[in-house]
Amino acid sequence: MREYFLKLDQKIKTKEDLIFFLEEIDLASDLILKEPKKKLSQKLKGKITPDLVEILEELEKKEKQYQDPQEQIFFLQLLKNHLTSLPKVKIEIAFEPERETLEKISQWFKEKLKKKMILDLRINPKIIGGAKIEYGGKWRDFSLAKKIKEMKFEI
Image (cartoon, rainbow, N blue to C red):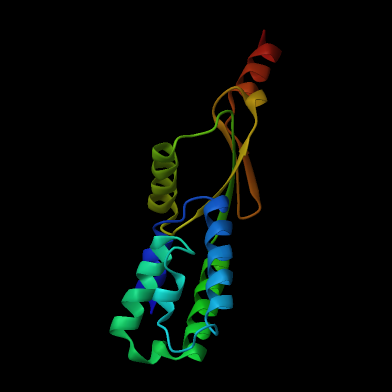
């Protein structure tokens, strides 16, 4: 079952992505009991993201017990619990990053901390450049605004 969780993990980089997928899981859960004879993946096509439908299709093919509505509800609840338990790192930056930049930031945290992190981004142009980062109750200010203030005091 973990392999399905990890596939979805790869799609989630930011807190916004996480919220989106949690809402998709809630929608899927609501649709499980409608048309009980129909496969869940078929009920959900066109109603939720193809990424989640693909995972559910794979699950239905490989794991026959997940054709039962109660097992489907159980799986989706486990998936939701897994996603909400992923650690988060707050990052304050001066600009709205492209998706490619988010990928690189996410990969950097994964390499340095040896685990998947959800990026909770805040945009604050006042920091000019660099970043402010909070993780595990520790706050670090690597902003250009801080450096400028420090230089100002030295002059």
